[in-house]
Length: 307
Image 1 (cartoon, rainbow, N blue to C red):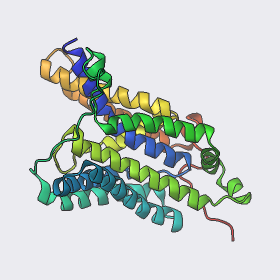
Image 2: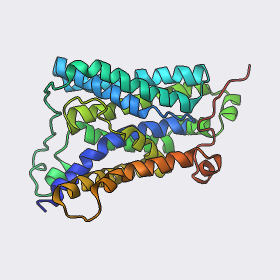
Image 3: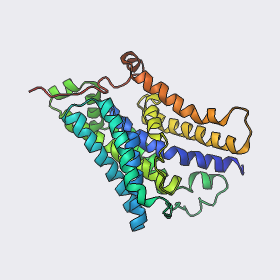
Image 4: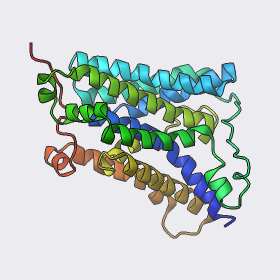
């Protein structure tokens, strides 16, 4: 137990940024938009949170700054793909490159700056319990927020009228437009929410997971979040399970590398999440594969309202 409990706690920590970013992308894709710029939005959110925390010392302001920065990047993406009808794949890739460069430029003055990481929330009488205490009641606010948001997104998409409308827009945008729904406005809302969530995922990396700023610190997590959405079949609770599975693989390969308990090269274990991501993105490029995976019917297709 002295090894297992810290290992499980590390899995939860590693999974949280993936879960936050993937939940946002799930809503975006349910609305029929494919945003491949998650990595760039996470990076901009990470530096926005770190810079705000370094300058103000306020965790709340840092988290809000990350969400706002991610949403601002998403607004730029929305302007290009929704208003100007540019290619969604190319624009998402450009957004990732833009986020990589912008975060490196802004973060140049913050390399090596120390900050106080996000505080763990102690629950009186529960945090001190053996095993369950550190496993369930010893995390920071963003961990609990990620689980709460999973429940909220699941309810919104499955039980609420606005969520059903959003799903309808992703499945048949022309039909939704014909009965009076503003397709572009609904998609803008989904894209902004996805950007804010990606920003929160980046904030968790720079404020809690590794409380420092390092250029390119997302290390491909934005691409893994994209793959998670497909693995989960566009279902929120499966995204949660997938994020913890990917987090577990990440932590286990680090543990295996440190302990020398496996004969499999640790480099092979480290590349497994990225191999899976490449496979999923390759499948998503095929229309027939998207149909078999039950992807939203209008995913990645531009919409121009009839005039």
